[in-house]
Length: 324
Image 1 (spheres, rainbow, N blue to C red):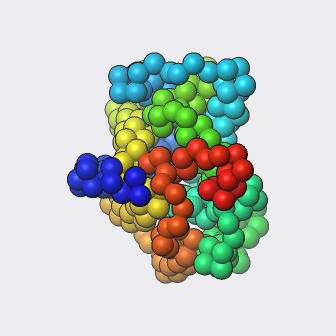
Image 2 (spheres, one colour):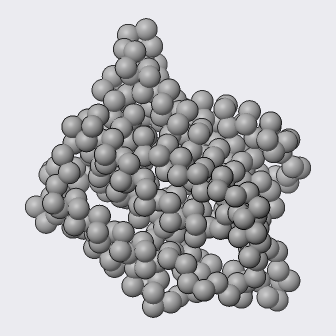
């Protein structure tokens, strides 16, 4: 495949980049928990949206050049995708993280590939197969097991936060599937930067009351450092490196590296936050990872070469369904 050829040409660098992507994403729950000791979830989401849009736009301009000309309809399409991939993704994740543990949040994010397959099937972007369909109940069984029968009420434990993080995974999955057409026409970095610019506006509007009450001078150095880490590592660094690596590896390769994220985040949560891993967590992890493995483990690929961004090369109209 073309993506494999590009990966060979680039050597080991894309794989090192993907490893750091998951390490960076894995820091976000821990940085978020520390920052939210002194600020609200919406304030933190606004910080990620504002500074993420600014820094990613600078990176995109430097590395990908000016945005290509776009019609009003194309801009509207990106704005719609931003509502799912940036606004819902950021707000649901941060709100859920505030109500659950960093370890739970990171583990539930690992369901994104399974949600992507479900959305792809519903949108007829993926062909059903026994292997992929078998992965769905495994992964969702892990989510139910993590919540636990005693916690399946809105008054118990971390249930509300776990549900919000799971909804965040579903929203981001829709974003990934629906964004394929855009990624086939332009660079991943310029698209992500534009989506962040569009998404930052509603996030700031949602967070306005909390931002009005924020007193930056009263924040501790630890909280400011956590915000900086969430922005630089968990947002800008992760998205920028991921965009660079996606152009040089296949989608299945990037999906595989998501396994690194819960392991690193769980270890970091134990060291920094003192979150003790429980037997239930390990059982849920086994079920979720088994489902994800069933769903995304690469079978022999019979599709035509892709563009290195997880999207197929443009096909003649009559053959489009088969190529997708």
